[in-house]
Image 1 (cartoon, one colour):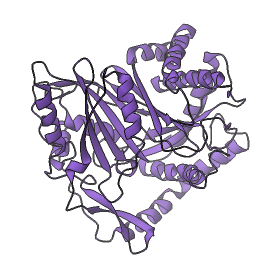
Image 2 (cartoon, rainbow, N blue to C red; image 1 turned 90 degrees about the vertical axis):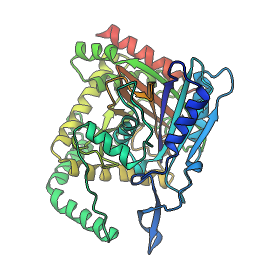
Image 3 (cartoon, one colour; image 1 turned 90 degrees about the horizontal axis):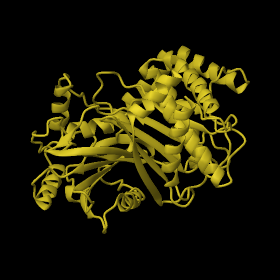
Length: 447
């Protein structure tokens, strides 16, 4: 359940590359005021592994363990970079330490280097991950940045740039009691709305859902819904937002709907090539941010909808129609909930998914086919001490029953796609990159 980000950068002009990488390492290795939870480790209560968990400050953090250095073998292509990222993403984070690691990667061609940051999903979501990148960079190429991205000071400076001051955090003295109280309060405060949501799901199960897609109903079993090994394979690519926006305008749909249609066409081609194209359409779990506009401190603020990808249709227009119908129904349902209610709903909807995975039955009765996630990112060009950030590629999580994840981040006029898959269960996953391009070209022709 760790996620990661792969930031691709270019060395500034006329710098000593070895000394510049040392500067990057010193920044990430700074011990100055790490903010929660990056200076904390997971601790158990009185009930041990069977009770609640909480964050406990690590007063003896070994930053040399958390910040590491790698060099790619020649010729230093993206292929070698992606292979290294797949290997790095295959190992668990040490549960006895703060749940993050940074890998500084040199040896890329064209004067480029990369930073791979792995963090447990309990400590961060996609939006918070993007803000971590923003806090470590600046739109000013001449800005001098020496603070660790994980520091309190870097986080507060970033909030000040956005016009938001310091939030004084009140540390609870009785963590378990507060958690239980919040849980019961949420149940009481949101019972009517959650009941309405559950009724919507019940109607869908009875065939009266008006386009709403739900877990397990007509979800086909494919090679993606299998037990996963520990090995991962990662691939990435960028597409111009303007290309995708042109399709969205012509079809009068959202950019996210167009990207889901790209993924739909790519997955249809991939499964058909493997002889695994199912009769029923694939269903994707689509995370939706419910973060309040001024919320810069919550590590997690997400809910979910289920999108019908329409892969049973050969015509890309029909696939797009199926996607739009299901996403509009899902968004309409979420619009009735507050951010806190939507988060509670997310717990309700994802619990069966994780139970199915932990019990080892997700590959028999998959609740959804895959996860496709959209994370909004910075619109302007960013720099780290003069080094331009070329792309920021997400590396998400796969687990039993869900052997493939597609996540994309918008950045500086592009959508940066990161695809992570079980190396054994999903062979030749790199072909999905070609199929995504073919699918987009097909949509352009259609509209």
